[in-house]
Image (tube, rainbow, N blue to C red; front, side, top):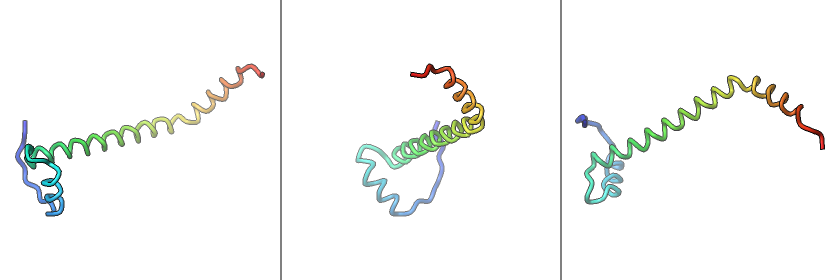
Length: 76
């Protein structure tokens, strides 16, 4: 479902949209696709930050466990 909205964009942005959208796609479709790609990138970045925060929260525990595992290695 599409919701009609009104936004103000600088003329330089509109010029670029018109240049890259092609003759078969209207501005709305182009801008919607560009926003979808941008928002997907933001979501991916947020997921990566959340995963890093989770790992950092248990980093000390993971390091202790890794050190313990290394003690089981046979010396060569």
